[in-house]
Structures are given as structure tokens and as C-alpha cells.
Image (cartoon, rainbow, N blue to C red):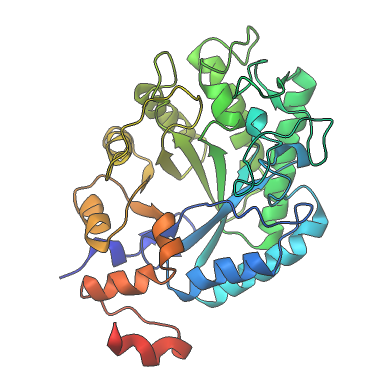
Length: 357
């Protein structure tokens, strides 16, 4: 019997061999935005493990857009060189390389999470002034962000445009825009963090304007690459961004050239109320899939092959993005195929180990 998880995912100009995708997960291991051998080994292991695609961690379109000083960047041509090496290896394993273009907004200028995760003040080493739609800090003790001017917004759009152009040069075949988890695009989408009174704030149409303008700018430099958008489908907070707005946004961005919505939730405000449990984010993906024509990815505490297969069989999503479970087992896809009775081709170098799984 055919298993949905191991059927190809057909995109407009490309096809993923299966529907297991590495979810973007920050490594905080770059130097001045430059990738290192850590990134080559980290992403290479997933490609060897036969996932369908890899979405590289949040990669900042400007130095000030990094969550931490150790984030990957794509604001300089110098950064293309190592990224090209990474995408070349990923492709050599029959896997599709993707990248998440991002700007952290008010959640930028932080310490690495295994140190403190706290925000670093602009006057301190490795710190800088953050920007946001409105002067509202994420944490009460944070340095307040600077409210973005029209010039700042124009610079941001240009940064995404240039970042996407470099991503294409580096060999990425999926370009995902980060509009989730409380980072800058999400900050514009939600009325909890966007209290502007100009054309970028207030109404739903105004709050989605920046995202649409960035989509247009990025789309203009793509050729055969697939454009994706990650969103938080709800803020889990009263008065915030809602599922209904997410559905409407999905419909609109689909007409603008976005091929897949990567559906996560939360991350915008400290007072969010999330009841975390198995599949807790899947209903949001399902609702968007059922009410739109766009491809949908599900994510969040998806740990087993049967769980992933059931989500697809029920029609709740078109693909599964997996994070932590792949950190625990980079060869999750190989194991999942065995558990589901699918004969998945392994790398020749690993074939001798296949019979023992």
C-alpha cells in the first residue's frame, strides 16, 4: 500500500522525493553571518538521511535582522560561497535545498540561547538598536525598538530583494519568508505589536501590506524557485492575529505567487496562552488547507512516522516539517520508511546498514 509520506510533492518547477521536510532551526553558529563547517555537516546529515527538502534556519537579510550575533546572514556576496557549498552537497544527495529569509525586528540583538538568550543593549558588545513597527519591546526590560520610518521600510524591502537574489545565486530552490514566531513580518501582521497609524497599520489590508510588498520584491528575482511563507496562524492571545486572518492572507499570497504556507503558531507576545500537546498546531494547517487552494505544511511536535502519515492521510496538510525529532535522529526519514513498509533508497555508502533497522 502506498504511503502518502513517501509520495512525491510536486511543485510548479520542482518535485520533492517525499514529504518529510527539515523545519528551519537556528544553530547560532555563524561568524559575522558566514556559514561554517558546522552548517555543512549539520545540513548534510539530513540530506544523507533522505528527507525530501531542507529549509535552512532563519537567515538574516541584514546584520540588524539577526536574532543573535551568531545567526546566518545573506546581506553580503561573501556569504554566498559557503552557502553554495552546502546547497551543492544537499543536491548531490537528491534533496531539495531551501532557505528561510528573515528579520527578527524587536526580537533581535540577543545572546545565544545556551548562554542567556537575553537581549543585548545597543551600547554593549554584540548588541545593536532593534527596529519594529511600533515602539513596544518584547520584554519589559529590553531596550525599546525604533519605530520604522518609510525609509526603513523601503530599506527592508530592498534587503529581502537582495537576499533572495543571493539565495538564488547560492543554489537554493525553495525560498521561504519568515512571517511567524514574533519576528518582524509577524510584528507588522498583528495588532498587538503594530499600532501604526499610517498605511502599514490599523486595518487588515494595511497590516499585511509589508508582507505583500516583500513577496512582490522577492518574487521578481525568482526563476524556477518555489516561494513559501511561514506564518503563525494565531497569536494565542486576545486581540491578536487570528486563524481567520491567516486564511484570508493565505488566499491573497497564493495569488501573488506563494506556493506553500508553512503553518506554525505563537511567539509574538510573552502573555500567549498555548496548550502544547501532540498535533496542537495541525488544526490550523488543516483549516487553511480546507479553505484555500494553496499547499500547506504542518509542523510542531510531530515525532513519529505514523503520526506524520495520519496527518497527510486525513488531508490536514500536504507535507510535514519536522524539527526536534530530526535533531534526535537525523535519519528519521530512513527509519520512517522502514516502519511504514516503504523501500526507500539509501546512500550507497550506508546501504550495508539497511537490513538491521
